[in-house]
Structures are given as structure tokens and as C-alpha cells.
Length: 512
Image 1 (spheres, rainbow, N blue to C red):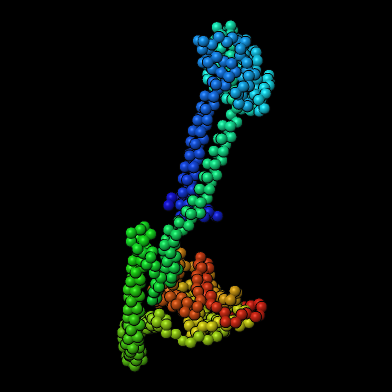
Image 2 (cartoon, rainbow, N blue to C red):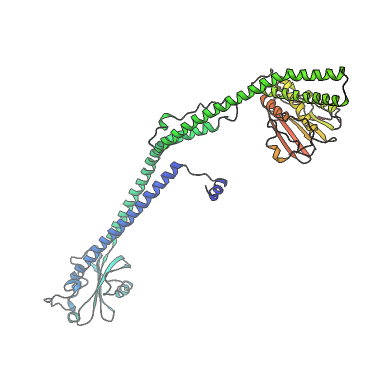
């Protein structure tokens, strides 16, 4: 697709045509061109034929007016004189025939127009002026006279016949020819219009039936595209109908290819899920097995430090072993928690008072990080959600811990709770240095660290925010982050169990 096509599709109100519509329009356009070509050719051919008949009838008409030998001149035995010319002779003349005789000076000598009742009447002066301009050497011509359109021709009378160079002009009306051509045009137009309508209706039915397998393939592809395939055990129940996956036709070939692709994707998803389950099982088993030796290491280290006399360097080494074992124990506990969440091992949900939970966790965070400024903004009435209390508490603890671990002392950290549109929204905002934009896309990924973006405090395992996301989603909520220098906000939205009934907010709550 070109840039122009992309721009057209981006325009508001622009809707691309369906394939069946394009096919019908193309068929109708081609048929219209053929009908127009046939109509024009038929009109021209019939006009030429009827005009030729009129031209052939002009000579007998001139002969009946008294021109010897017709327009070709006098016969050898014809002894009639100029006085024998009688344009008013209506015998054998069809109604509408006109004859006029002009002298060598161009003046009209006599003229007559045959009427419907067989009588004649002279031509008007305007008509005679037009007829006088007819050149006998140029052949038949058409004029529009006061009585209608005429096919006229002029014949120069020989001098030996008239004793002067006179001209006889004969004309026949073209009304019959024009009426025949009009009838032909209307007939062709009517038949063409009827043919276009029938072709459009029949073509619509035929094309719809022909493209029905393609629409079925489109429905199958759309259904597959809407399935949640990103994680977990995925099954693709949609399959291509057998009638639309028969080789031999273009649509059948596409259907067969789509069916094979779905089978291939299904196999790949099963293999991926099996691999994920193996990794998760391995992490769960490894985390579970590591808990005991790590606990033993910490216990023996603390025992030696309390009961044995060791050198300063030895004590420093044992203290380092103790701190690292604690850090590794924390990592193992986080991995085990994620493994349990992946396997669906959770507690029973209950009605959780978010207001009380936020006050408790913020108070604990203030005690553990007194060098920061803490504040609360809570509704006057309790806000309850249906969730696992321990999991929501863990979410708040991790977010508050993340806020003070990755910002310098003195940072202001605000926790707010709002309710709207059936959701309870918890926001944890700090005025620290912010998160690097390149890190925002992977901030909830496991083992993703942003120490370079925030302060370089050690001890982060890179699993805290991954655990937060997993816990929030397990309780039917969503989490998002918005960060810029001087402001970072983590927002958690959870479905409300009971709507907020009071108005106003309580700020501060003794947290400073």
C-alpha cells in the first residue's frame, strides 16, 4: 500500500469498498460501455441508411416536379421547356415535399410545399433565402426551415433546356427518419437500462454466493485474532469449514492455507505453554528447595556471630554472607509467590476495606522510611473491593516501598483513593527524578531493573512491580504508570464491591 493509500484510509469518513461491490461496479461499468458503443453504432448506421434513402428519393421527387430525367438533366428525347417546370405539381408527391425554382440571379421564380391534404402553398421568404444558398455542386444538405428539418438538394438546369441558368431545389422532410432514430435510441436505452438492472441484481446474487466462502474465511480469521493468545493454555476452537478449504479454487486454496496455519499456530502455542509450564514448575521447585538451605545458612551465620569470637575481617565476611542470604531469601520468596500465582494458588476473596488498608500500609512505610514526606487523600466513607486482602496489602507495600527505595530522601510521596464508574483507583505519586522513558515499556517485566533511571539503591530484585501487576490482575484490576521528571504516578484500578455513599475526602490522616 502506498503512502497515498495510507493517507486516504486515515481520512475521516473514508470507507474502502468491499470486493463484491468493486466487482459489481466493474461489471456494470464494462456493460455500460458496451451498451453505449452498441447504441452509438446502431444510431449512426441507421441514420446513414435512412439518410441514403432520403437522398435516393430526392431525384424522383425532382422528376415529378417537372425536371427532365430527374436531377441528372434532360433526356435526349425530352423537349420540355422551362415553362413546363411546375413546382406546385403535387401529383405523386408525399406530404411535406418542397420544390423551388431560382433564376440565374438567385431570385425565386416559383415554389411550393405539399401539405397533408395534397394541396400546395408557397414557401416563406425566409425559407427561400435559406434554399437560395444551396450549392448544387456540394450534394444533399440538411436545413431547418419554418416547417421543420429537411433534406434538400439542388440541380442546375441546362441552358438549352431553360434558356437561362436556373436551379431547381427539392427537399424532403426528415421527420420520419428522426422519429425512427428516436425510437431506436429509446429502445436501445431502455433495453440497456433493463439489462444493467438485471445484471446488477443477478451479479450481486452470483458474486455474493461466490464470495460467501471468502466471508467465512474472514470470519474465522477475525475470531482467531480476537482470542487471548498471549499467555496461558490456549486452545483455538475455530476452524475453517471443510467446504471453504477445498483445493482447486482460489478461495479453497486460501482456506486450506488458513486451516494449516491455524493448526501450526495451535501446535506452536501448545509447545510454548508446555515450555512455560516446565519453566514455572522448575522455578517453583527450585524456590521451594532453596528456602531450607538459605534458612540454614542464615541461622548458622547468626549463631557464629553471636557465639563465636572471630576476627574483624571474619565478622565482616559473615555479616556479608548474612545480608546476601537475606537478599537471596527475599528473591526466592518472590519467585515462589509468582509461581503460585501462575498456578492459580490464591486465597479466598473477601470484602476488603481499602481505606483502612491504605492507612495501615502507609503508616508502616513512614516508620521504615522516616526521611520522606508522606501524605494521604482518602474519601470520607469506606471503600470496599472484592479481593484477597493479603494480595492487595502486598500490592500497596510494594508500591510504597518502590517509591522510597528509588527516590532520594526528602521526596514527597502521596497516596490517594478515589471512586468513579464502578472502580476504586489507588494512586501512589512521588516528586522524585522520574523513570527513564526507555524503561517504562518493560517496567512490569520480571527481573527488570530501573536503578539507572532512579536512584542507585542496591537490593532490588527486579520482581517487585512484576508481583504487583500479577496480584492486581489476579484480583480483576489493572495497573498503569505515568512518569516524567518531578512526578511519577502508579495507578491501580479495582472493581468496587460497594459504591461510595459519602462525599468529600479526608486528607492527612496524621501522616506528614
